Length: 104
View 1 (tube, helix red, strand yellow):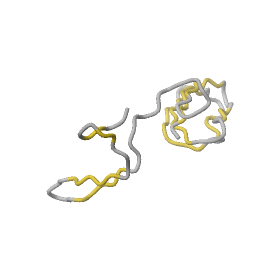
View 2 (view 1 turned 90 degrees about the horizontal axis):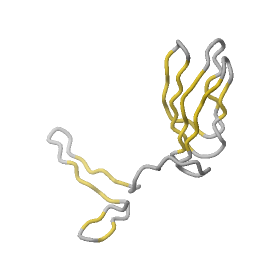
View 3 (view 1 turned 120 degrees about the horizontal axis):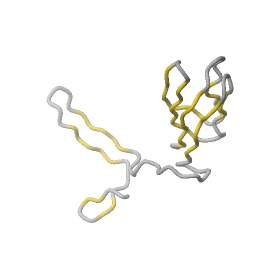
């Protein structure tokens, strides 16, 4: 969904003045738009579930940048950003579950 000002679509970069009395500064927006929508396509927005048995790794598909959430049975959970082709999981004695979402 485009951001509009006076009926015209804004196209970056755009300088925005942030009026913070303790730290006034300008912010440059270089990307304008909505977050990717989860989809089954192989492009930005691709969403995959992780469900691996004890000690198995999940290979993030190659290419792009991915957000992930991964939990381990009785061990905790982690979230972050990783590059395509990375391995997640693979802790001996713990199965893992979660998702990856291609964000760029």
